[in-house]
Length: 239
Ligand SMILES: [Zn+2]
Image (tube, rainbow, N blue to C red):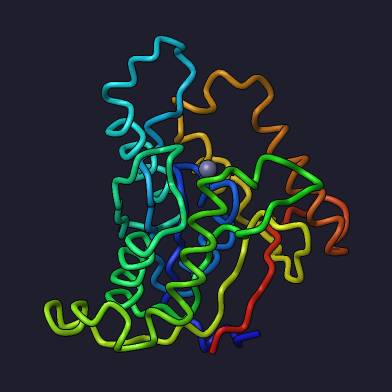
């Protein structure tokens, strides 16, 4: 695993607004506090989200971008990029790999945080098909596309984007985590980030308690002790 001082830039690639906040906002807050530059890349605008069952989701994409921008700010992130794919329809594809490769080459991150691409059979929610597609395509973009100048050569020839080697990928939502971040000191900022997604969580009764108990469970698994909160990752060396 990379040492703290080897991590200067981090790119978080997620399918929907709020994914980064559930999976990694506490870790992101801690990274930002020690000067790491963090960028969020969102593949969709979450335009199939929401709880008003009117089936007219006009304006939802724009609302959710605004909510994600506020959530990012709560944990110190101001660089957000949106690919604008349609929520609920993401599949692994060369087009998606190229879009993600472009941003990896622009941002040049040491670490990429994204969804685990495999289905979690212990808990269904992290395995939304969009999550698996984004996780898989992001790993493919990390290896081999972003580091191979012959992959999508137009990125180099037309956009001047040099090959870039990401050194580690941290996967969220998998069933076999091997690293836990103690986020106790920033749990309130993670909660504020999550609560910025008003259209998604404002109606959920006991939401704060739900969040705290869920991340206390990870802390328990990590052995951090009573009163602690943690986020869990599977770290994949990709150097
Ligand atoms: Zn999601």
